[in-house]
Length: 261
Image (cartoon, rainbow, N blue to C red; front, side, top):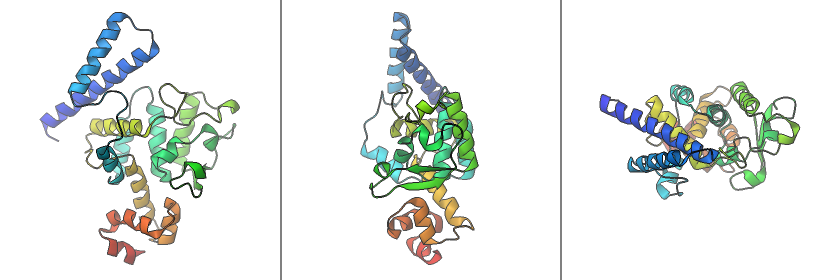
């Protein structure tokens, strides 16, 4: 990254922070007319610099970036986690860490409730996504909780004061208003902001990158040992053809992925 790109990235990150601050001020309903005017000016500036106001539409380009994305490396993942900041830093860290160590899709992660990971007294050892929240809605999927995911989720629900028994139906990853889960596009935007801050290329980077990182790690691990059946089960695929598409980026081609299985 040259000096010009660095300053451009830094400016956009700072502007994004001010935009998020203006959103928080307006949401708190404790602002003066002068602050209201300043917040609106910030929004206009944010839009003029190439950003979108409010909740963006699900355009083809957004979903192409998310489904055709690349896997993250371990160094990139660590850098993104370190670059997370703001009021919901712990929530975002828990979301990305859980995504990296379970391989769940972003829609499956955002459907989770407190009771899926917390039994009212302690963290569960595994997490299950029900059939109605899975892609295809044909079967549920359970995954053991890695210690890193367990720790970050525990810190998040403690910070958010959501450990009481009556919180079990609350969303695990709520939006800023707290009544509903955050959106997939919000997670995508947070990921890109952190990547920009860390100096990581956002080309072909999406929330699906965590799932592909999980697939890469598992495929090369001695426990899976390039076993197609085990890999397919870990990813929750009903057919090997779906798993093979994931493994093309590991072995370089469809043929080598099949032969390595």
